[in-house]
Image (cartoon, rainbow over all chains, first blue to last red; front, top):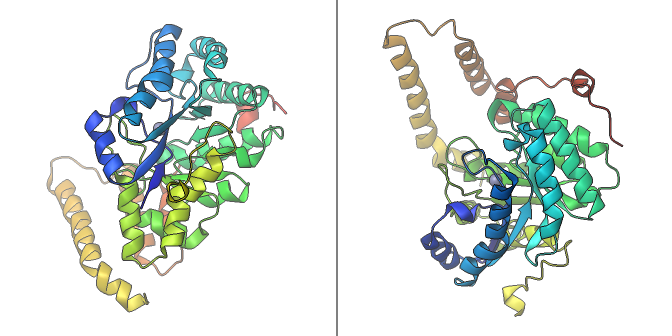
Length: 272
Length: 84
Ligand SMILES: [Zn+2]
């Protein structure tokens, strides 16, 4: 089955990973801007990163028949530095017209601090000003529930940002319903250590349904598995779910969310 | 799949994970020092109680047990104005 990985950090992955993902049926992916594993020292570090996301990765992906899209922001971890964040916010509009940029992301909270909240709000305002969709990172472990509710509070302040243009990522059992009930899209991240396993993700699909729900690998430089979406496909098949439902989760849903940006012009491979 | 079929499939996994937890707790107990007064151990005991109960949505309950509290008034605590 072909699929889309809506959240994967290919700057941290090898070319072999592109080849493996292509063989497993990945036809498109989106890469949100994130923390590189160290704090970047200047706005120029971000400029170089945005060039990597908008020029280098799409070219690497194309070698393997994969469409590469991305999202731009300064992530929550580096948002503790409000001045640097504001410099990066000023830089982002230069890149918004690049053909593979889908919107602003992954913005969000990490330790749920005041500075993170300030920079989150400023990103949302930038997205509204430039009519961009938004992809949101929610914190992990003990900070997730609190951080997700804080994010929903801040989004509720911005009626100009339609809920269907926002995806709240890394939802789990205790946050998924809050996100979906508020009208947003939700993403489940399949991760070996701190996040959701394929079995739990399928449990969640069985409990809340497949509307506005996506899954991703969030493969990055840490312990992660870029082929986690095919693992979920296998688990759904093992439980006897219909191919149509599986396809909705791994292809139709991310495509419908991304297509709100006209630049996401991925054809259904079946109709090519 | 009915409940028995799922149990057939899951039983050995459940058994092995329970043994993993029991062995981890044994290892902590055998070691020098005392972890019993660490608040994480109280959370672990509470989580095991939830898991052993017949309550619905046990995964969600365990998640909430391991979550920091959300304070509705966080914005005023942070002195952040609503930016509507
Ligand atoms: Zn990410």
